[in-house]
Length: 196
Image 1 (cartoon, rainbow, N blue to C red):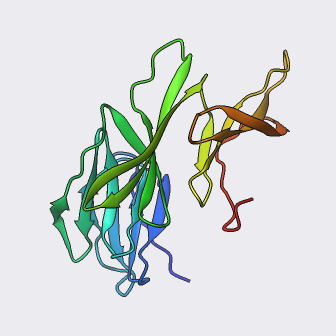
Image 2 (cartoon, rainbow, N blue to C red):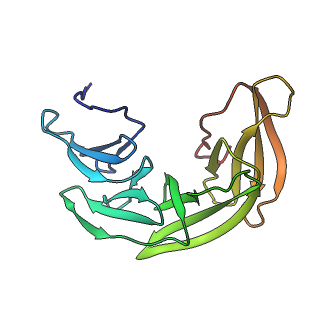
């Protein structure tokens, strides 16, 4: 087991490169790249938000408002590409198949709806779909086939902290069905590889 220490701020997300050579850890406003072959080496800091992930070709994709920074771990100070997104969208989770889910970085208050968009990185950032969903979301996750969006919301029981999960059709943004109720507040959602 490898243990990395020395981070000055809380680590909020980590990702492992496809070849198992690099670990990327986000502290919210930056991403630290570490070579696993040399755990004692100082990490290289690159700019990026909490969401990040490795593409199938080994490049690191780091989120920022309205764009994605693509960085090769061997040359982390060089930005190889910076595909732009529509408006003020912000990548929130990177998915297999070089895709990522983005949401509005500047939600309006009170929150009556929120846009979600699924992108694929092919040369640039190609939008596969965009939907407007009602109300605020606590957590969100895209199905492996990209056809469904699971959204966690606050429950509607008066005086109780609860959450509910809705399944939406990505083509329309409309609710298909309610999947579950749970006590407390949801922090994250994830799909299994088989689509459940």
